[in-house]
Length: 89
Image (cartoon, rainbow, N blue to C red; front, side, top):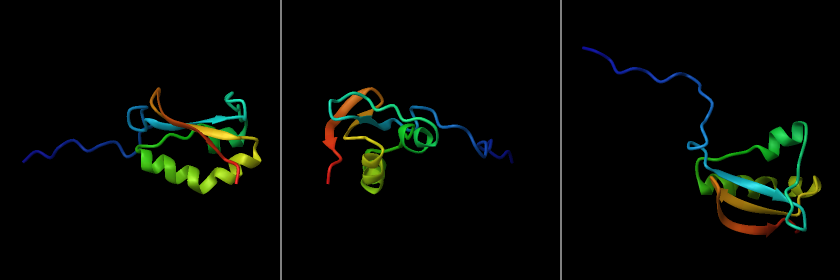
């Protein structure tokens, strides 16, 4: 009996695996460029589903607002899904 090939224990996700992402914007709609650890933690996030992306923004929106993000727009790959959505309380 031959067993099927096992998947690698880790592989970086491809854009097709995580097509959902938020564009972080200032009040004028320009993209906010975060740097350093903030960029790694917030700006470069991608998600496998719309629900995952929406849950994430619901948990960290106030932290983004503290970093100067005024609004966000949701994308699936390069298709704008909705936004801008304000992060003001």
